[in-house]
Length: 318
Image (cartoon, rainbow, N blue to C red):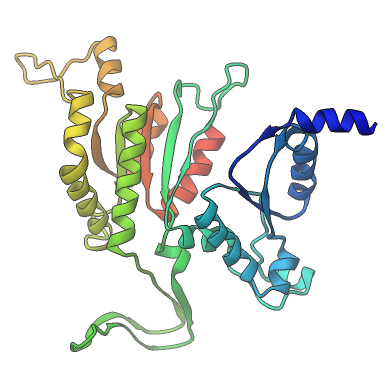
């Protein structure tokens, strides 16, 4: 037995760099242990930096373990995370937690300040709900700010809600939000240019690497300044850093006009146009409708909440 173990040890592949392991809750702990014991450790000599993100350990460490795991990921660049419980009122009572801790995914994403890309693996022998999807759709979710770092409150009665910004060394800027006539709720959220620029760069790098179109979806017709900022920064980043690279890979606009001014695409031309590397902004409702009727094969850059919702929609459709 010892000889066999020694031979097996010699044949394991040495992995040079450590990875971060973030253990999770409930059945994911069981399944992940089976995967490690049967499929990973018998074949790989791997240095693992282990963090227990189970809800009880997060509670015992006042959620510091979540922050430490994210900081370790910044150091080592690669992490494997299991599914975790984000406690609500019921879970707080069930596990006798000290606090209703924030989503560990949200905490990790904000520390990494990156983009979460989700792309399904297509299997020919697994039927798809949306049969028109012939190619994968890669969703890039902006992993910072918005609702996931918002401050919300319950309004108990009539009163004025205001938003105040106090610039360093300047007079405060005050905006009237709403005059409450009775109870209600309120929310304040934010984002920063630096993170939006990084989101734009990573989305365009992903699209270029795949030679796929890139779409950014927002609701800038309603949130003219908030979502409009995303649209403007994406366009700036595209013009400054990516336009020439995209155009080198494709001439993205090829149209055939009839004498009536309409556009006709034969199936072959439509397929070629669809696969060309390009960037375009679309309204979120228009983009969702397009996603349902498209055949896939593009990168979809979403704001934080939109990416949360649409990535699950994508997973179910495929």
